[in-house]
Length: 386
Image (tube, rainbow, N blue to C red):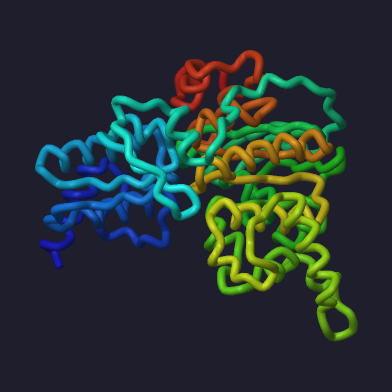
């Protein structure tokens, strides 16, 4: 056992993670669980290694470590199959690109002879709008306000507000405290101090039931583990939070459930054989739309979306970005947490940069740049911490 632990620690050290072989995987963040999966692939003398969306939850620093590991494997003669929807990664580390669309092979091209635009069109059959969000529209009243919120060592003295009609993006490294703030707002964590105000009224949230009753909804980072019941039907997942409201006597009114599912299937363009289909059989993008539809059907005051496009294809990512902007235009107050800089730049009206549990700066879409955003989330310019 000692030898096994030593070998494991050698690999973990190579991956530059902050935990050792004795750490329980269940106690790790999703990002660090991903690093354990990568470490496991390095424990055997493999002739080929398949990486399937390995960076879905990793920080930029962790991605650099992974790419160095892949480069080492290539030099050792190991064949690498790298599956990803992230164009910048594909063009950074691959020699050839094979494209699939709807399960059909579309072709293989040399990376050096291709562009992101040409490969994206092969993937989805059309062009994408990847521009930054520079739209301007009138905002409504403040829907959610947080004052001096703290939760032990996870985050401290966090203050911000979100208006109706506004998308506020939260950007930062893993362990910056972004997800923990969302979990507090949804009643999964108790704050150690601070205030939460909804429409100007201070509220206390001790459980998800309290949050739902107040109109606060959370699309979690781990949609399969926390957002869906994979063995249940699309309809049942869609209506799960409001089952009690759909009862007809001792039974759930099936017609009302189907009506809700049909409405949000059409509204969100969810592609499924029908309401009876198991949600676990859907693509990642359609699963994410089911989770979003589940909460939209509750008509929330505040919609919190954590890593909205994690592990989904480029086409679905574009659709979800468009949906978030449309929801804001309809008057929703939207909080988006993302580890992808292009994503927060594309969907957000304002961006809150966090580092080590603190808000460093808040940017409007007009003033933010990649350089000042990276500086803020790296802990530089700490004198400007909010």
